[in-house]
Length: 206
Length: 224
Ligand SMILES: [Fe+3]
Image (tube, rainbow over all chains, first blue to last red; front, side):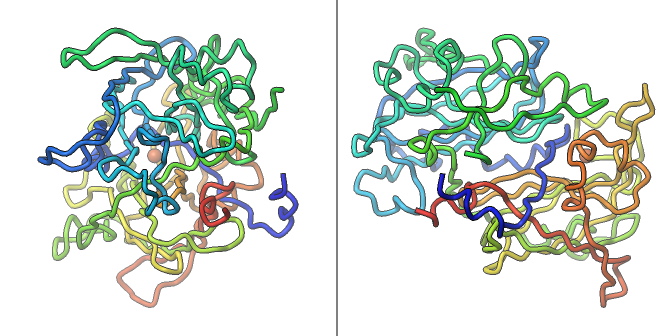
């Protein structure tokens, strides 16, 4: 990695800290767990297949982890993320931001979104995935990515290939039938610690 | 090939930390996947007037109980480059150690003039400023008499950077037994606000708290 050579001249980062139990719920008032509607009252919608992801965050004892702040981030139906670099990208979807934030009171979450696509322009295309950041009491930020169980592109995804084969299943969202609205529903349990622990990734050292 | 990063440690005497800290080392992210780990929050935040003044519920309202303090600082990446237009969310307990949060069941005194929630944006040079009341310590583990030292929670978000941290106060008698402080070791100094005298006499004092966001997240998009 080239960037590690410059380490000597760097400032020491401020320590991250826990979220604590009292993150102000009202600070999430303008956040939404419906990525298919970036504005209220508008009939236009993002491209792609609408889906629902239901999941929960569990602790080492299998209990639900309450009071976590969750951040979701994903590419649009063409595999393009909205970033400052893609503002003029022809395949950027004007009706899709790909960002959601939610404080879960009881450890459950439900995200309505579109199935992310594949950016075929990349040298090594990624399998469709959703990045999840968890802030919680007792621990600083942890990050991971969630994939679609059975998607053939999982076989060649560079992130999945970077972890042991027997851990890959823990990042899979499983198809779980249809919602009342007829959307495909996927489910996943995030296990923060212990047996069957979800693999988390190091975005400070990587 | 599996490559490993940091091992997150468990905060001593912190039950929640024990329950929620991953036991396995973090996995390193291959370069091809790196960009997908720098979420970008696309919103323009509408901050209302007075949100950075937590010493009052709203402009013109009476001041909350306790010592009004000013907190200022600069948010940068590891290279000292300012992080502009970042949303800073702030929350802290009142002078008695009580949060207005609906899940704070401590029974400590509430102050009707103190909400304990604020927001502000960093300017073009990465600087921020907010006013609050110096928080009280609170008893986090009554069973072992372990207190949380005075602290102010802060979340920094904008562009692809986001971090949650806490500002502590030098000399707090409960600093040494705080689980996360113990994990920080000598680097704890980075999380202490540096006291200064304010020219205005309606503050008890000011604290300078510069924030350096580590890793490639804050600058990822500028780097490529
Ligand atoms: Fe706190």
